[in-house]
Image (cartoon, rainbow, N blue to C red; front, side, top):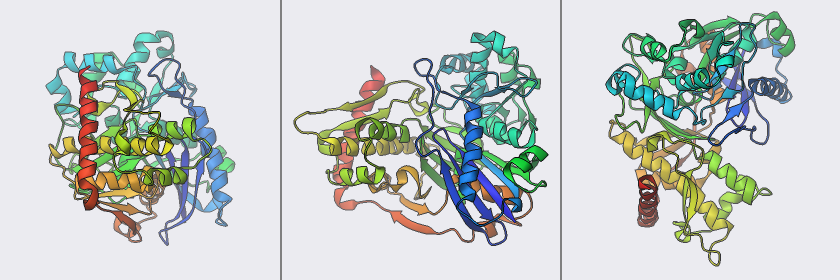
Length: 495
């Protein structure tokens, strides 16, 4: 039996074919090769067309099966990981009302902040564990306030992964983890947060039926079975936001365990078993994939918008003819501190760990006679790594002090410069595992469909392919560069 896992990001869709009997990955693919377009109709807006996501699901599936002799008809379970905090809106005919407002869009910050104050900060934090801030609920409120004609045509709202599941099954559902990502879940009642829904004046009928994360969430339609060639009995059996799913793919399920990723955005994600929130709102807390009312498992999430997006910007605009491995060689030819060049990577909208402020990205200290491309690459990688270190310092105040950070062997953690910077300044060992979000989605699908008996068996073959540890010989140089970076950041926050 085979399961297939999709990981819908804002830059690409990844897919993995997984044998639920042998617990082996049979094939992996990604599409498109270059980052998907993010539309910005206005400054600090970010939108994508859900139909583009679906077309890329079709294309990545075809690419996946070009790499294997396994039969499509043996696929019996589908798992979906997806970019968090997005808003997809459908009419009662199942048509998309407007482009999806995705995770890094900042238009709704003021609406969310106003709700936080008017509902009451304590009420929000104790029930939702977060401010409404820049999350899905606030984005829907923005549509209601600014596009009333479109809002009145909405029959159901959903997250990006809910939309992909809908296209496979023609059934509109969501999960408790998904609603918690939108700050729409009440952790005291373990139900849709009626306080926020009533405050914004939403009709509860807008919100889909809640399904378990691991379960038969819907059988694919005959049309989809024929289109994809999957078993007509195939089911969508797992769905989770990219960061809870990334943690799951790294076998991070229990309190005290930590995962991280460095894709378009950067994330550090730690599991706790108590209702925790940060009064300063530098980190956010959501339902983890194995959270239940009886056995709480919560994910404390540090998110940094300007990470892979910053590095991709540098490459696309300054070194389009080079790949990331060539850029890494350039970075390693430059000393720690990038010859006094400092980079702030916050050019992708409001940053939650900076109190939702928009401070922009910048190179500081650029000298035309001294600095070259290699210095800019090194400064960029260090600046992104410093933002991780800065955020982890805030997580420590909540009792999450990592000695080990688990990451997948992709995205920015393929950079030794980046990973060593974090390891040196935090003192944590970084374990790189041969895994990915798509692998996690495929394993979750097999388990949710009952084709994998227990998760311990599923992760039995996980292996650490390399580790990054502190570079003690250069620790002082890293600390000097980091201190300078923090000083620059704090001066921007005060201005």
